Image (cartoon, rainbow, N blue to C red; front, side, top):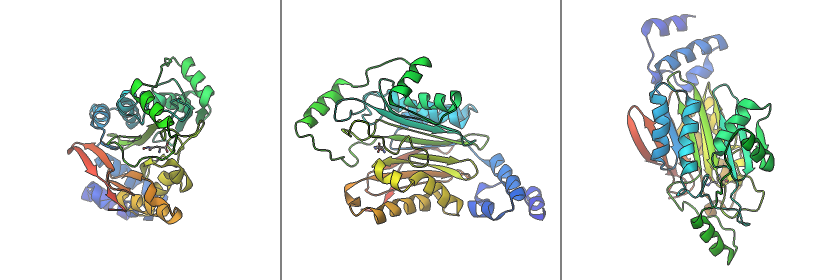
Length: 329
Ligand code: SD4
């Protein structure tokens, strides 16, 4: 009680003074009060994996007008889903080894609701179908034909997602048919996005066409809540890119958020989650994994195995592409 009065009287609304350790050491009643004060002083912010300026700018447009974080992340990642030049997401994505483009996506809101689609074909905006799963069904995940059928019922158009460019590359790949995911081949890839809106609420989304030339039916981390994405509105959020199997084995995004809960900064939490993968996987030099995270105060961080991963931050301070620190140099 005394502490609450002190905070109120002193007007200590500077977010830096109210870090995660302070929140976790309070009694529940106090915690509610403190988090209300934190929220009152928060400014909107959006972060995304890779250098995706169009996507973060789109999300920022939503936040700037007072829109909510859920609408912002959906609008943001849809830009990459529609961009045929991004061959790791949505339309134009690289196919599996049989030549089928199959999409995975999920979304999570500030109330802990979530929705996902996995192994879905012929629909560009997988993230919006995931949102419909969250909002209009009693389930959290729909797969394959069921997800596709549900999307048609919700009015999504059927589209051919395999572009000539991706088809030509796949036909070339088939000559040797060797599954060897390439590290950081582009400066954009699977997109994971986290946003805080002006109410201080956090949401996230993640969408991908998965690893190029994967086995038919393969699903990675990106649509799996806790692995490719996790949001806890009291603490923060995290999202991942890279070799999904390793991210799933360590429940990566959930791990990052739990580490933030224990008092780590987003940067330290992402680093520790990458370290877990390195400890578990003797072949870590052959793979890339990158995490980004945000805490309730709007502090951000990222970490990856190989250099070359970057993430985009958009806030009232401006629009930046940040080279992530990496385990290997
Ligand atoms: C997956 N994590 O399906 C995704 C792929 C990815 O950058 O992120 N590529 O495993």
